[in-house]
Image (cartoon, rainbow, N blue to C red; front, side):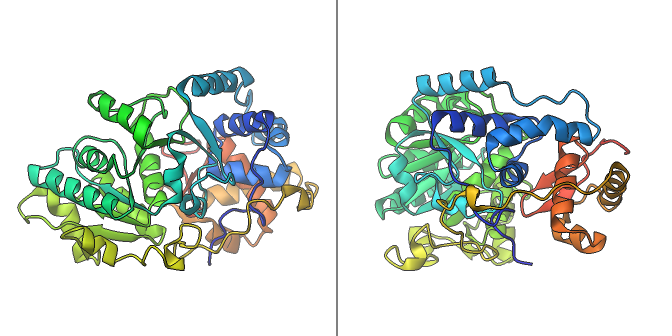
Length: 401
């Protein structure tokens, strides 16, 4: 089944006032509210403020006591820190929100940005690879980034050691975007402090995480997904068989993006991931011309970020269509016994391996709105985890395990 960009018929109207933006941020920073739940709550309740008021009751209905939304003071402190760092909040639907990223299912509802927002209007190519890159790997990353930037492409990467660092440095004067795993004002690793400061001045830094947050291991897969979502293509320069770069490549394939790889020697573990990608159909890269040849011309309609979509995505309607046009949610008709029974039916069908939400809908034979509310309750209670692409699973060590 083809997936909608969001569960709502219409994309959400971006917040237009400071108070509305604070409400968006409060909802997004509230416990157990990820992008999928954020958009679901916004659709069901009409506004972030209404959703914030409804969340504690929903958590109690799910059996979770003492649930509290993100405190207003925490958001006020984050906004104050953003102002000091000269960071701008890009909400989904804002004119400056990255067009390709907006086409993803469960796109980040908000991003902090520091730097030149005009870079988001240009075609982007991601270059990723090993932190312990070889000298040949870093040379290749520099050459690709320099030549692609010279041809008008913005180079996207993650500011990590090795390939990321080489790509950012080579593309700095032509245009580069760094996606951070922590707060947009936290440069990591610290050895890239000077490079990060150069990107603040000449390029662009992006992050979906709160201001001031030090990156943690669980943040990097989310960071990688944003890198893939921003770009028309992902080029992997060096990558081990199990690496974050291959996660980025898999994300890109799921989004319908082009994936390209630089081949390496079979005896070099740092090249094993790239060689695997090429074996499985990724385009082999020798130079920037190979990358450009895999993409539509810049002046063609397919090259425009607002037109180019993943293979499983439908064209999105205008972000300016208001949620006010949506009908109010129907009254809740399930009693507590029916709700508990539906909770157990959902949990009985989920395990550690992700399961499509559409499959649950088919197996349970319930109305989409009933399953939607139950999934939100279970997520708030920590019983289920959501994954990109509408996938659901039971968390390790969750209740009942």
